[in-house]
Length: 622
Ligand SMILES: Nc1nc2c(ncn2[C@@H]2O[C@H](COP(=O)(O)OP(=O)(O)OP(=O)(O)O)[C@@H](O)[C@H]2O)c(=O)[nH]1
Image 1 (cartoon, rainbow, N blue to C red):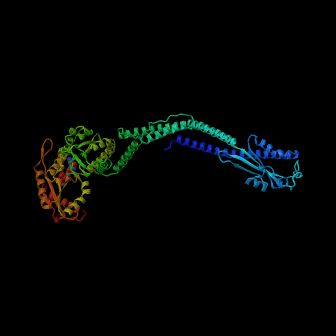
Image 2 (image 1 turned 135 degrees about the vertical axis):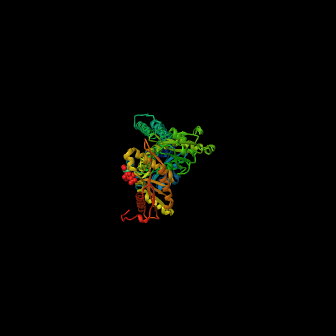
Image 3 (image 1 turned 120 degrees about the vertical axis):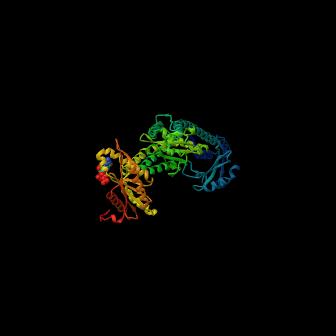
């Protein structure tokens, strides 16, 4: 690439060279023209003088001495040869004349014939000479009447004079003049070049400095400044460039400060300030989009799935775990392993699921970095540790406690480095996820509470209303039956009346525990009304259900309820019906269980009555 200064100087040098050439050629041409004109005039004047001298010689009768006259004229400085040729008419009148006058060459001959002068250059390039051959024409109109002596017609050619003059001195003079001109132009060119170079120096240096600074800026280094060398436009460019660079650095620093505030740590700078900042800002934009997405998610499971996608797709970690600490802060649920939702615990000892304090991140609330010492958390999988893997566990703090943990399993030194770089942004994602997870958990527990009975911890009637369709569908899918048992404490009112409501509540809680102890985990126990309960035995027909109901009845009968100062014995009555054997609609079967309960009450209490169609005499809707 040609530099600006070189280009400008080369352009000027070319202009000067062309100018020199033009001046030289123009000078030579005009000089040649001038030389020829001057020689023509000189020779014409000399020819006229010779003609006058010869006329005078004729008048004075000294024509016979014309040879010496011509020789003396030829000695005049600048003339090389003077020769007179007689024309035919003169020879006819006065004879042949001198020998020299009778031997015309081709040019003499042409002039004698035409009566027109001929001017020409002869002698070649080395010693050029100018030759002029001029005719003498007879006239009666001048001072001397030629026709007085010459018996010729008016206008006849009497003869011709040939004059030869060297123009060597003129050529020397021309060369000297042109050389002087060229020298002057060269000196002018050199002075101009030096002046121009000096003029261009600040522009060129400033341009070089700006070029270097822009190159560095492209690599993200905005620290280079340009020296202000003058107070003209170049100086202004340097000044503007510097203030532009200052402005960029200032704005970028401000953006980085804000970004650092947002990610709560200084983003790593790899050298390119602009690219690093752009990368971090686009990372934060993704965090904001992530936040918006999880806020609109319905369940915490969906949020965990999005966190999993971030770890896998944004940060490109193939191996990781996501754990959720249960709301009672006792157990940990494994939400995701390597992108598989609800997968069994893989990268940690499964004991952490049962005892959440075995997870160091949950226990301490700090990030646990296994890179320095992989034994810092003993729950990390032994197999993984033996295969030189390490880990970085980041706790997600929800309402002052650890709500979840994201564990990165790092397989290679490159992944370890990658984790270090990714950590600030990943923690930003987790910070955004924390309140959303907390809100989802709160919503879930609120919803759970509306479906549960606060006193006994059993499901309530609202739960049954929401869940009955699912139950029916399950039954149909499995082609199995379920038994609905309605239960009611006998003479419970007297307990309240005698010992007060608190004792009554304690008895209801004890009763719920007896129910729980006598049915399968998969069965449903619902507090249906005040002291009325519904037990739904899944995959159980009425016959088997009756046995369970009996077992419960006996368990209650034999239980001694603590009424403060005394122990009480209480009994229950129960009625049961079978879905779908007793009825095709759930709420119909429930009604049948209810009427069976009333039959049990009517039958003397402390008994279980299985529904029979004769018990249903009503016609009302269920
Ligand atoms: N302590 C307490 N009592 C309740 C609760 N819910 C309902 N009860 C009481 O349970 C009693 C039910 O009385 P009744 O419907 O007359 O029935 P009962 O006295 O058990 O007699 P039978 O059912 O006919 O054997 C009422 O006194 C209610 O106030 C509760 O949550 N706690």
